Image (cartoon, rainbow, N blue to C red):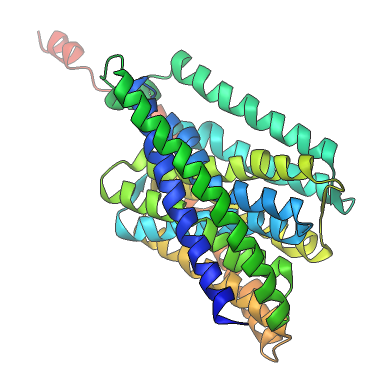
Length: 379
């Protein structure tokens, strides 16, 4: 493994981050000018913009015939987004979860993750599967925009109204600057993705690590740096709808658009390795399901839940390394993780969810106090 290869890897990551930053900045400002609510901005424009490195890398990998990197990038990024990005962001500032995420977007994230597993059961996500996934991404985006304008729930309407943009029609100069940012960002993304894919393949071959593991770890973490920066900074600035919506929207976009387009342009589709079917994709689904009880409990991701997410990501990476190197401590680590930690966590989340459901039912059944009726009784 030469210095040039490592330098190419780092340069590719830098270009991806800078390109995604320019793309998100330009797209977000255009959305604000058009009066799009920030939750929708987080779920669509910011999420899709920060997922553009995944798109560039996966499509480039498909063209280069490195399907394992394309698949591992999507699966690894989705796991990284929830466990590490939300975990670190919640450790900094507890994250408030919007009503729409619990009610609609997280169930969609779980559904598309399960659909990915279903499509891959035959060992390949074919071109027809990819077209279906990509069209699903288009429909999901249009539905989000439509729903944000037709929302009837009072709580969600309040969330939208609080952040509604007040800008009028933008000047042509503003449009020009923001469209230029988007264009430059896309160019940097294409170039950075090419360097990252080429260097990752070289590293995998030199150290004897499978391309799937490289995609699940180095590539996925690298292409998720824009999501990490966006969600962490948004949480510190109080834009918590964007912080959480960015992660959920990115995960949905990764499966529907990134994997869908990669499979659609690949001549033979995307082969799904048995290791991915047996472990990594199920982990991605379980992580998505775990969001429901955590998001549902008080509509808040607390610091201890953020710590839980972060620790589980470290455990996941450790398992990948131990399994890939056939380390002697793998059986003990697996027993501790899957025989104790995971069942205990599932039990804890189940208890938290049950308590939240009972608490909400109790609040709904409690009689409300009416001061007017009390005054009438006193008279």
